[in-house]
Image (cartoon, rainbow, N blue to C red; front, top):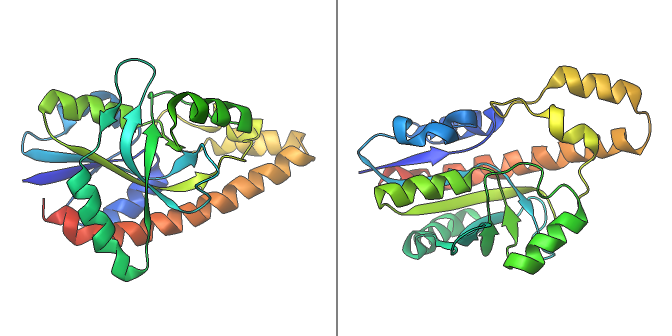
Length: 225
């Protein structure tokens, strides 16, 4: 029996690989070919990394634990509630709280870049957190008839308006930051956009710290799969 972790960005993979020795961690464009990369012995897929907030109930760097996951077509998917309960109990002695929430993931980027987009998703789906990878995790878990779960700290909350500098060309296909684009854009924008990018960076740092803490706290549970 074994669990496989799926995240988005190289920073997330670096942290998760160090915190979860011996556990397979897939990232970036791996989500597009999970059927080829996830071994047959896998018994659980777990989405980890960071996520965005859609409701006032979550703020950076609180940790969202998916209960149901909505998308644009078809019924919501159900995470493994028993594992969720075990995970919450496992991290509690370390002073870590997991917030069980309805979730949204349709596998698309730039769906929640400003408060209006976030509010619309919350109103339509009742979802309180969002990421880009979990939709692929769910599809693969369904194809294999195995459970899935998701534990992710918030890197941006429902109030966040991600500046143009932090969207679009800022992300490479593998999930890493396009530093050349960022530096070029910052050089052209000395106003609010640049300040917003630095806030995004600070929130992101906090979320990565929370990710490292929760991954270490869950290491034994994940390794026991």
